[in-house]
Image (tube, rainbow, N blue to C red; front, side, top):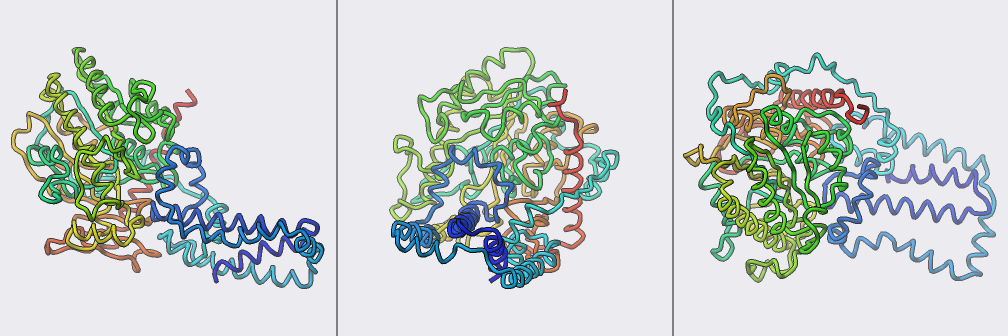
Length: 577
């Protein structure tokens, strides 16, 4: 019912201004509105958010991930086009069409159309104006109506007031996060002077660690890393519309993603303070490795903004073993290890970020990449395909680890492994998939578990393996590594914190959760229209006492996002140099 006033509003314009082609105008509007609803359905099924015009920036990415798009399409969604098809078929009945055109070929009477227009406009404004302040975009769209929401996001003024740069200080950030600097931090300089190798695993969620099906480990190599090194099980993604590329941005900057759009499209023209630049000042050479084309997600500009010396993309990795839209993980790791060995020959250390990709949505890897048999009831399911693809990703990672050890790189490097983002959105799972996830977890699959990814840090200088329960996110990787490598952050604004020395945290979330959502040490908070109608979820199900997120923490999280947005948006543009 909330959609009807907007549709009547458009119809009023047709009645006023169209005559000869009125029927065509109605059909075009019908098709356009149907396409909007269809896009909303499809986008929600993966991201869990209501799509708006900002997603048009992603249009050029769609053809590259068409397999993912088609996998989200349930055939019954196409029934939304039933009336379009019916009218198309009727258009071949010339007599009928002539009669329709003849009976509609006049402009509507103003005395009839004007009251309808005024009423429709009033109802649209009645739905939009009271709901503009709602923090939760889904509730906002529900209360406004989808078409009103799309119009509102298109025409709403961006009246953002940036906090002056002089007021964005590390002290103000630490106060909001209640972080106190540690005088003699643990692990300080334990990996000083070592090479840094960061491995970003595609769609790798934390539940895979130590998971067994029919008594067989799914990810034996990741399990071994978690058992023998520093493992952070309470670690969460902080990406948005840019997914993998957003993870690259957050990890290398310790800034939050933008409120709309991918970081690679919003911030890639900025001179970004970053991990590569910090390490360059220490004499490091830097490179990043990804088997897709560098133009995908505008990575070329991002890598320039971050200050990487070199990037290696599909032109380097080739297409002899292509899976989805790039060379397989086996090829990625084999060729990367060779380059790293050459970089290691230089007397100065190096930093490399390696982006895996084969275990990519929709996880339908070719049969020659199968390295496990699924239980029968997992075969042909989305969850089963995901598990099998991650088993292959783990197999390839194991080859890389062996190669690094054989080339003498492992012992001389600080190794960091983490997941870039979730692989199994709750919104994409059908009934059978949800039952399988319930079987794996022992309870209903939840938002908390959906966003939970692993972080593992390995260095021969860190002798004792340890499971570190501190809650953290991708924004905390940079300050944690800075501590291990003995790099001062006194002149580097960062919104994360050292997970090895701070046990309390606050983690604002965007995009996959409504604006205003956050995680505290024990609780996930999903905002409603504001704080009062938000929902609290315990992060853990162990029975430990949880402390609900307070309104003060809610306001602190919003302020942190504002400070990050203000700081990054006021950085100079390298494109203007």
